[in-house]
Amino acid sequence: MGGPKTGTSAIQAFLAKNRRKLEQDGVVYPAIENLAAAETGGVTSGNGIGVALAFQQGESQQLEAYRSYLKELKSSPAPAVLISSEHFAYAKKEHLESIKADVEATGRRLKLILYIRPQIESVISFYAQRIKRHSEVGILERFWREHERAFDYLPRITQYADVVSLENFTLRNYLRESLVEKDVISDFGSVLGIDFTSYERFSYEINPTPNAYDLALLRYLNRFKTEEHKFAISDAFMRIMAQEQQAKQKELKMWVSDVLEAKISAHYKEANEKISKNYLNNAPFAADSGKPDQFVEADRLPNLGPMIKGVAKLYLSMFNTISKQQRDIDELQRHSGIPKN
Image 1 (cartoon, rainbow, N blue to C red):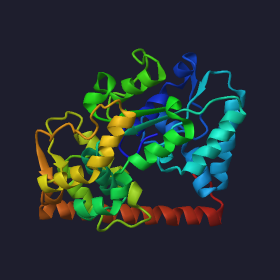
Image 2: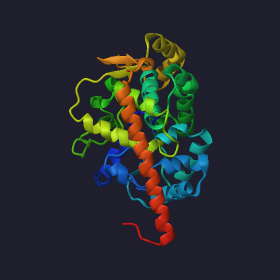
Image 3: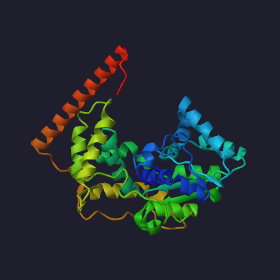
């Protein structure tokens, strides 16, 4: 488990890509969700998204995923069956208790692994993700105020530990300096007791946070994106940006202002001290990796010139026109009975 932007996509794509090798090492990562995108390095919510949402939303597809999970627990000879999704980070206590009871009914034991990220880094990264994927146009401090409870990890951590007991609960600090080999995948392997050295890795970063210039462009585009096309447009621009950044140099990153950084640190100080004492063996949690070499405050993202704005709006117009034409073609094919190529 892990909240947004704690390496979940990287871990889950790695697990999907190495399913056979994992099984040889005694861990089954079942394909109870379609893992095709994850196996090729795409952004993924893990094989456990249906299980995580089954009790929260109860849709038939999610309940079917949950039944498949329980079936895998009963039938698999492997010592461990692993499911993962960042959506478990929002599970209520009663949901986890139901899952625990069903797991124990199969003769197994439920263990939870949770990654948390220091709030300053998490707020920045989560805000960037909202710009990239959820049409965010507001300023950073307002965003944080609207979501400040989501970054208070203590109630969640206490809840998880209460459900499974401390013996079966592992909390990891998603801070580069705290990770094994300063790498989240190696760190996750250490939790599982598996050396991932011989496993296959992706050669690129999965679901990266865009640089400040790209975020400025995406935030500008969010003013015009329709709900219908918001993910498709975001994905298209991210592919363009990834291609342009193959040979990366030092990038201008987004960061918080000194004033906002002080507010965030003070707001979570007491809770973070309890997390450090009760769950991290007094290892410091709230420290961050420090400001990037080159950064700009989130609410002072680079200004876009009129030509860049014009090209971006032209791209959006073309995208919407092509999408409409495709819908018209699909409609004609349905009525005429002409098969799709």
